[in-house]
Each structure stands twice: as C-alpha cells, then as structure tokens.
View (tube, rainbow, N blue to C red):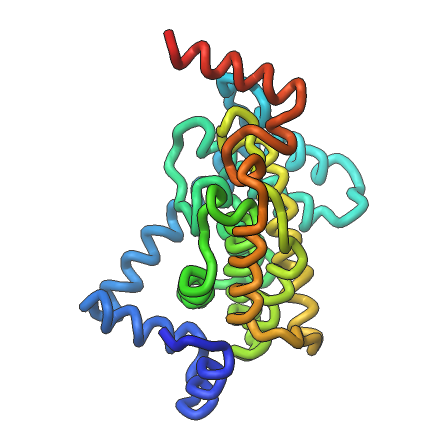
Length: 293
C-alpha cells in the first residue's frame, strides 16, 4: 500500500479508482490471488459477520461471569417497544454490535476485524448500512476492502494491540475502518473516507484498555456499541464536507505515540481503570482461582 493519505488520494484521482479498487489491486498482487479468489474470501468473512451480528438479537447466552449477558436482546427489544432517544435504527445497530461481542464471549465464530475485543463494530456498521440502504453483498465487500486499506495504514504507523496502544488501538481502529467503509459504500470519495477515519480516531484518542480480569467482555462490549456510533457520526461529518486538518497517516502516528504514553496499567493488563476497581479486582481474583484449579 501507499504510505500517506496524500499519495492514496493522488493515485485514486489520477487513475480514476475508488479506494477499494486500489486495495483490491494491491492485495491480489501481494497475496498472489485473483480478484475472484479474494472476493470469495471476503464473502466468507462477510457471512461470519452477518451471523454474529444477529446471533443474540432474540436470545441470550449465559457467560461465566455474567458481565455482558443479554445486552443485544435488551437493546433490540427496547427499539421494538419504545421510542429511543437516538432512533430505532441506531439502537438496533448497537444491539448488533453487542451481539458479536456476546457471540465471542460464548466462544462462537466471529471475524476479528481487527481484533476480538473490537469485533462487533465492523459487522454492526455493515449490516446496519445494508438494512438502511438496501446494499448488496458486492457493495459490502467493497466496504470490507476499504477497511483493509485503512487497517494497513494503521498497522504501518501505529498498532491494533490493546496491550501496546490501549483501546484506541482496538475499538478506535475498528471504528475508523468502519467509518471509511461506510463513506465508500455510500458513494463518498477517497478523501472523504480518509477524513472519516481520521475523525473517528481523533474522537477516541487516548482511550484506555482496562478489561476486567483481562477478558475482552467488560467494558469492551460498551466500546463496541459506542464505537459503531462513532463510525456513523464520523462518516456523516466527512460526507457533509467536514475535513480533518491532520491527514490520516499523521493521525495514526499520533495514536501510536499516545499509546506508548499510556501507563501499562491501562494497556490490557487488567490492573487499572475499571479493571482496578473493587468490583473488577474481585472478579479478577475469582477468575484466577478458577484457572488455578
């Protein structure tokens, strides 16, 4: 992939390409695959996302520590029965993000895009856009390709690991990938997609990673739900013409630097933040005792 947002925009404009066209061209070359083979793999990932985002909308799982059980069904029921402050559409979208988180906690099949702890964001964004705009699978695959391009830039300049960069690196990255995908799927330009990704990361710069007992359940599931909302508002800003003064590659560099500045207690160690609370430490102690038996 190209190194900077400026280079990507220039190539796409000069060659009349969408961002996803550029990614497909580069990925098939690197992976030595045909476009058909690449799209077949992405279709498989898409099917996993479809399933996980709907798995617990109408049923619940009982997890070991019952920290996130039933959130998806509660949210889905709420939008059916009430008049939510946001909208029925957005509440159902959050429910789909919860669903993948719950599927993961119950050892179900998910697509880690880019991580297990942030795996609810991309599926919820794609499926919600599909439902709202009647998008077909080809368009969703183009969204996935766009997200791959964004992920490559993040990986080049920063990290996806909560242990290295905090939750900004996990849910922040997933949200940026989703925001850019939404913009491209809705007909936006490559510059708008990159602006959406920039805005998304800026919104959560410095976000701690503090999972209770080190499990990617709580507070991770809330950050999946808020993360998909972040991707939506950032996509809308970009499509409205709002720009990030700082280019996306520089935003990623800043995220990487901020991640290194975070104290180790809030980088997935399960020691600080919410994990360090009295309740969090009690659950951690129980978890460790069970593991020792």
